[in-house]
Image 1 (cartoon, rainbow, N blue to C red):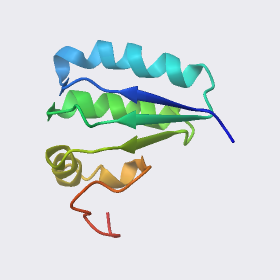
Image 2: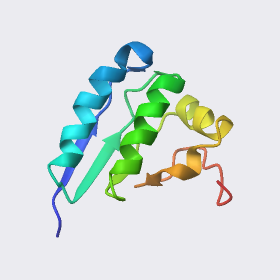
Image 3: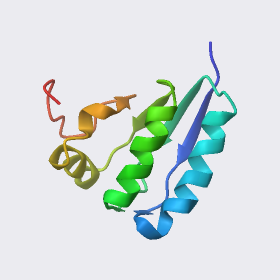
Length: 101
């Protein structure tokens, strides 16, 4: 079984946190971890800058990044921005938006 690393994101994923987010996520994926789970359970706010970091890191992760524990407000934000389907999910967020997303 491949090892998995879990990364817990901070409550605020906004412009002010982008450098912290990059420094938290990028080295983990650069260390060639076979699988990285990004836990969103603590996230209470996300803006486009925070989402941009997630999208950038996800694109460079070669499919090794999975999201989990997505709060409803974050799930709604991902749906509204059309980026929900850009991510691999370890489990579907509560309030499953359905197979079309």
